[in-house]
Image (cartoon, rainbow, N blue to C red):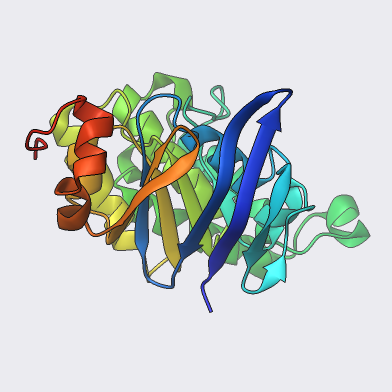
Length: 256
């Protein structure tokens, strides 16, 4: 059974059919790329998977459980966590504070915590959790700096760290390398590969940077006009005439 599975995903906006009958699966240990030309339906599918949009038709399952009607918060508590195209951080808080705040979604709550705060053992465990994320992402030297004072690439890495702080099982990344230079992109994708199996079970990546997608994803799902155009490995997708036509508008070799 796939870790995350969608069947018959369809979304209408009035008379406009944005996504039609798309099937998607994300398996344990996998980095799946979701790509397509502008307007292909990538963002709409991403929002449906994460609960920000309800499908007009179709079902979404996490570990076999139907989550189609659940809110984004409920999905996050079950281990389905996302990032955003635009950096979404507590900009006036420090790097470490951002990670602490994000960690609480996976911690036990209740009246005792509200009145008295977490016990000492939980505080120590939280501190270790934050420290491990700072080490993993290389943001340790920046822990006391405000998020708004970080370089752009570091802010994008911090957003991934914030998502990881919630201890997700499935991580969905929405254009994580957008605006990064080549060096930052390589570092970001190396981090994404490193967390699979260590911090998360699988990752779904929506990205326009074809080099990042083709060089890192185990499998790629290509959309065009809201429908599945192709699916397979990077080599299979790169050589698919329909994909070449959709991206280049002519039957010529796709760029690597």
